[in-house]
Structure formats: structure tokens, C-alpha cells
Image (cartoon, helix red, strand yellow):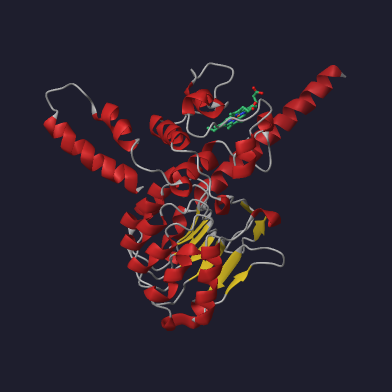
Length: 354
Ligand code: HEC
């Protein structure tokens, strides 16, 4: 987030000069941040996605409210609109996240309250007019069962309309021989496989991708794309699958993908990435499959990322394999034994009753 980066700088600067006052950084930062224009897709949507969508999305609509689609979110829930553009203090959404945790209406109704910084972002976003770009109605659902890269992308079809800029970008890419095609009939969600064009693909070739918000599957394997080139995809938050294997990408490149929170599959096989690069992936909570075979990544790095993403499957190749499976198997056996014991007890009880 560039805003918070700038905020930090200003904050540190002012801290030095205001050291005599007992104003803490935590008090100053929000007021500085309030002035920065927020970007819905980068700043706001990830919060809703991570904390609210499971109860206010396509699957469940608690309180008849959906927060995964701009139009529906603005309509509100069973109590009417929950967002009053320009005025957070009149917005039920903001009120509910700032209530005491014990209050019946507090949101999220389960789990931890939002961190103060996220509450401030939602407040500022509403105060700044609550803009929700129509091309940000991502609703891509990926089947969780998929393993070893066979994860299929299952898209709710009518939800996505490309912007004019996107259509233009797709034409431009087509003229350069890069086919960005729909992933199925009757959908505007798209995929692009540039692997086939290999060494013809340079950073400049993929620059127009920055407008293709409907891209869900991108294969850059074996291309000449560099760390800097990945800046073009840094805002493509609908991206589900990304192939970077056998490219010159290193840790610096992964900085550009740290906000791609819908990524479920990432292939880094044969790249220059090391443990330091993995730290950029900490916020990619949906990541299920990560391929790090033939990189500088170590067991320690994998152990570290598994702390923040416990459900992640890391495919590290033969050298690193022992770290993955054995603990699970032990657990399984214990479970089985417990089950057996339960069964025995049940049987015993039945016997007693007789
Ligand atoms: C575990 C499920 C759950 C989560 C997570 C959750 N909510 Fe809710 N939400 C509910 C339920 C249940 C209701 C209905 C409560 C009621 O009828 O008063 C509700 C109602 C609401 C309403 C009022 C809708 C209306 O018009 O009645 C708002 C606003 C809201 N939630 C916002 C949020 C926001 C923002 C988040 C994320 C920070 C969130 N919720 C996360 C379960 C959840």
C-alpha cells in the first residue's frame, strides 16, 4: 500500500519534530492517512474479502447484505442502506465495526474485531465517497480440492464486465500476437498463456496487461519477463493462477504480487526467489499451491510461510520433501485410534443398556 508507506515517512518525520509532545505515532498516523485517496481494489476490497464475505457474499447473505458486489452493497441489507457515501458516521456498516465487541450488532459477528487501521480505511473510504468500480465485482470461486496444479477455475458467469480500457488493452495485446481469451463461453473472465511465445515476451510486451482486470489465469513461464515487468500485474487482484517458473524473477519481483489476494496457485519453480521473497506472500491467504522446486528457498522459509498460511501446500521437490507429509500422517493415526476408542465405548454402553 503506497499510502501507508508515505504515511510512515511523514509520521517518522513528524515524530522527530514533535518528540516533546506525548503524541504517539498511532494517534498521528490515521489523521495523515485520512488525506490519502484510497484505492478500493487495493485498500478496501481485501478487508471485505477477508473478513466479511464469508457471511455477506455469494454463499451466505446474513442480514440480506452482500459486500462482494458494489451495486448490491449500496442497496444494503434488511435494514436498508448500510453505506452513506460521504458520511461514515451515518453508515450502519461503519457503526457496526466500531461498536463494543460485546454488542449484539457488532461486526464481524464472529472472530476478532477488525484492526484499527482497517477500521480507519473503511471510514476514510466511505467519507471519500465510497467509490466501488464496476470492474471490481470479483466473484471468482476456485474449487479447493484441486491439487498438483489441476485446480479448476469456476467463475460465477454474469458478474464481470470489462472496462473500455480493458477491451482496448486486449486488442493491443492481440495485435502483438498475445491472445487473452475468455476462459469459457459466455464469460469475460480471461486467461493468457504466454509460455508458448517464450523468449519473445519482454517486460514491454506485458505492460498492457495492467488494464486487464478480468484476468484470472496468467502463464509467464519461460518468458523474459523480469522483476520490474511484474509491476504490470500488481493490480490484477482477480488473478487466481500465476505461472512464473523458469523466468528471471527474484525476491524483488514478488513485491509486485503481494496484493494479489485471490491467488490460489503460484509456480516459482526454477526462479531466483529465496526465503526473503516468501515474506511478500504473507497476505495471500487463499494461496493453496506453491511450487518452489529448484529455487533458493529453504525448509526454514517454508516453515515460516506455513505459519501465516497453514493450509498451503508447498511443492519443494525431492530435497525438501520430508518437511511436508510425516506430521500429518501421525495425526491421522491418532485420529483413527480415537475413533476406534469411541466406537469401543459406544459398544460398551450399548452392552450396559442391554
Ligand atoms: C460470522 C458471520 C458474519 C461476519 C463474518 C460478518 N457479519 Fe455482518 N452480519 C451477520 C449477521 C448474522 C447479520 C444480521 C444481524 C442482524 O440481523 O441484526 C449481519 C448484519 C450486518 C449488517 C446489517 C445489515 C442489515 O441491513 O441488517 C451490516 C452492515 C454488516 N453485517 C456488516 C458487516 C461487515 C462490514 C463485516 C466485516 C467486517 C461483517 N458484517 C461480517 C453476520 C456476519
